[in-house]
Amino acid sequence: MTASTDASILIAQHGDTQCALLPNKANRHGLITGATGTGKTITLQTMAEGFSRLGVPVFMADIKGDLTGISQPGSPQPKLSQIIKERGLPEPAYQAFPTTLWDVFGEQGHPVRATVSDLGPLLLSRMLNLNETQAGVLQLVFKIADDDGLLLLDLKDLRAMCQDVGDNASQYTTEYGNISAASIGAIQRGLMQIESQGGEKFFGEPMLNIADFMQTDAKGQGVVNILAADKLMNAPRLYATFLLWMLSELFETLPEVGDLDKPKIVFFFDEAHLLFNDAPKVLLERIELVVRLVRSKGVGVYFVTQNPLDIPDSVLAQLGNRVQHALRAFTPRDQKAVKSAADTMRGNPGLDIGTAITELAVGEALISFLDSKGSPSVTQRVFVLPPSSQIGPITPDQRKTLLAESLVAGVYEKEVDRASAFEAIKGRTQARQPAGTVAPSPNGTPASASTAPTGGTAGTPAAAPEKGIFDSIGDMLGGGTRRTRTSVGEQLARSAASSIGREVGRQIIRGVLGGIFGGSRR
Image (cartoon, rainbow, N blue to C red; front, side, top):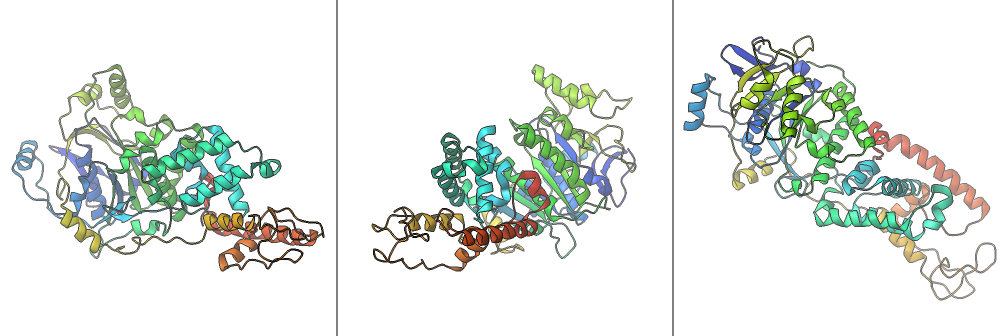
């Protein structure tokens, strides 16, 4: 491999052989694999530093809690200095890199939230581990909420919506299809499980503005965004769905730019196998589509996992930059993984790749990056350069300082709970409660107790309940009380207003990927 240039990111070397990642090929995605303890985290940290120096923001999940050291300058350590000397590597220029800390639970970083509507039924079905029938019912719940103009912002909105649809399933059968109580129950149980894992903190507002990930500091260095994922890993489906949602947000938000001199942002997807484990075919197809198309938005995606077999072939084929750390061939599956990794890397006449994979030392790797023509370079056996920043986690005091001095300090800390589906359904249910008297309906016949207005006296119409601004907006978009009998003229007027409101709303709030993942932007 040719020597690196000033515009490239030097990742590893061995003697005169240098492996450098070309910034204009970094959005062709990549793969970092290797067994536990072989040096993947150091490789990830070194690559993140290289991108930051070029002014490229980075996002990565901190699974083990030790990537936060990138925010502090490194220092010479006896063991590290000895390894550097033995391998003939250059001494790093120790420095810190601008860092923003994030945490779904809001404990170790700034809170990260999304609305239920924005996540959409497909990703939510994955999170709840629903089967095909249950996922179909969840899609109907979203459709009914959308048609009624009800906002699904947090989990209590979705729970209320599911209960309301389940209680009135017979009224939706003709228009939407059968809605089984068993499927509604499965969805509610899944939501309870997510809540027990603390996942309700992920849903709500203010929702993450993906532009806050794409910052640079005063020196022009890209900000390294680190998601605290040690606790999040206890809910692997929540973790995988969250990262996939973030990737979809990048796709929706960023304009089409083609190939740039350097990426707009680089996204490291650690423990990538969680994304694909037991994923339904329809989700795998959409992941493949997003990975393929997000490149043209200037986003580089790097999957980090222990075994290359964890990545489906359709996705693996799109990962041009490869870093392969050691694999252990202790089991038949391990042996298959070694062979698969060796077969997918460009051959080197002077290197037995299959044998080398099992012999690599910690911090040693087989690397094949894309060359200037976009072709995989010859695989080289090299040593990954040590990072310039601190290896290992930061202290609690250092974390507090980072949070206080962050560019987004105070932006996401206070949760907002505006009127949405929960409040609308609660008000609608109260309005349907029996009042003990029967008010006349518009056509002169007595109305049933369940639909009679409350308040007022027998034989006289009750006063209409006072409405707030959100109720008025809901009525304009067709979100008023559905099951109250009205005159023909009122029905026609409401139908027209509802159709116009929904069409305008869809044009305004739905993003491109909302159609792909089934979500809607509120």
